[in-house]
Length: 312
Image (cartoon, rainbow, N blue to C red; front, side, top):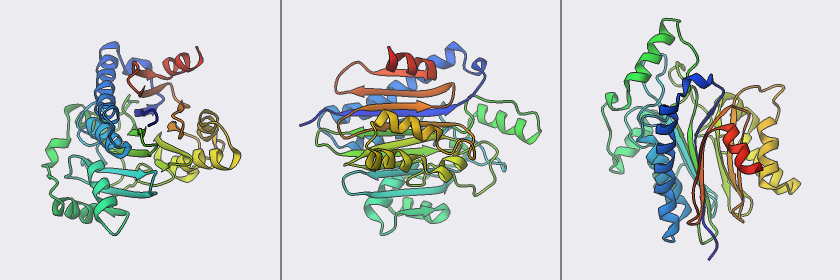
């Protein structure tokens, strides 16, 4: 039996530090700890990486501080549309959903698509009908809307919007279980003020996430358009597989890949089959946490905390 590892992220973004005062930072760290624990507990009792990443992401989908599930950003019409993906590194099977408006936990629908559906990706009404057919609860749209998101939407509509700490962030998790299996899950409410029907990278295999037992598991966050077009998650995979880079070097390279043509925010969490951890971003905020076995967990909101931790 090998060691078990889980890494999670709650979004990477460049923002004015004033948008995350100390009290909000503490709440974010508490939310990250809670999500990390939800996944780590499963791994520590010998559970599967797939179960761990789903549990961690569900915890953040239920927490209105994160832009996924409840608390997802409003689109231009004042609706919350969510998306998610999950992938099993052992089988290379995956499930993805987008355009959800009534499903509490998009990551769980993605998991059911992977396991119970002949397709790998369902969208909008079809995805919601599938969720209902599988017994998942649907919620009134008001469940997803928080006062903070409502205020941000109003300011976008009125043209008075300023930069927000929650802008285009995402949640995700990667895990390695005691049986050597890797898995990833990514979920988001998308960018604020997006057009109705906009799809981001979080549900795109190779963009928002990727998992392969032989190489790595990756989950990304940032500007969805550029992450999709740069194939960021798959880039980490390719650099490891074909250039034999360490997981840290591969993640560092992927953060800057085609940055001249595809400029924007990128954050990456990645894990290799040996349990080596990589957390990289080109942003000043990288909400993240990880735990190896039963060791003390690491939790951070600012990129400088991450850099200090890994380079001390």
